[in-house]
Length: 429
Image (cartoon, rainbow, N blue to C red; front, top):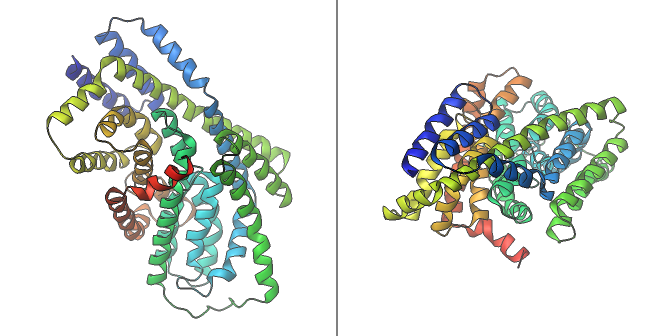
């Protein structure tokens, strides 16, 4: 029965998605129809109970709060302040101001949790400034497209939050686990940029006075303070992710008031945008909950576990196959859809082979990063194409060396999983 149910689910889900039906609705339709066809249970009561459990979760409140924080910060002048503040510090190192694409993206990622917010906020400032100063457009666009994906790896991260809810793992541990990989990948990008543009001579107009050096510290202070308040409160155990998100919203509003870049009208638009985005993600989570429940009652995860374990394949082969599945899906659908569709299926297999669910969550986020710069659906490719005169094909080509760095890092975390698991292990002992 499990084989027939699995085949029905795969075919019906493919048909729904190919028909353009929204992912949350597709998951609901497939879950409902499969349970009606293959089970003799009170389906309505089961699904209504699941909907209540999902929407009644306190951790779910962190989702709209982190989205609100990111939306507010995009409207502030914080990205401009980051550019000005980082300029004196990177002007004399290999890569020069190209390093701002990497460093500013990493810093903005730590307060937004979004690829779109990070790439758009940083790119709108750095692209014209770097082109004006004579930097190679290939490196400007390639470094921005790749570093912008750090928005979902460096916490707080929306995909980590969604994964934590779907997989029922600690959000705090997920956030801590993403810190080292985020810094590591940032360092790889920075090293590559430095090697590609190794000139140590300052370009014209990049000589700074002592006053400008001092001002640069003040300009990065709001960002560093907000990062410390949000992430520090989680890492030190002083607050839950939801409470930290509330702190972040308050800090973002203060920064907006400090830079005089928030009006009542803009705040209303921000709240509308946050409500729309949050509602979309919550509906996907409800659909994912239905999907996970249907799979559980149908016994499909256990069936797949028996199938995989019975074939006597090595854990490396299993991870290779799962990686190929994610790389394929990344060319077709968005990261949230990848998580909610696959985690209920793969999680029992991952657990059976002894992989850490925290490690697997970060691993998925790394694969989603690659999906963001992979045609034909690479989100960052289209976003940057929309704010520059360059085509999606050009941007994908210029991002390819950074994509290879991401793949190399994925191989590294498979070989050395402690890169991901060490920090959350000692932080939550």
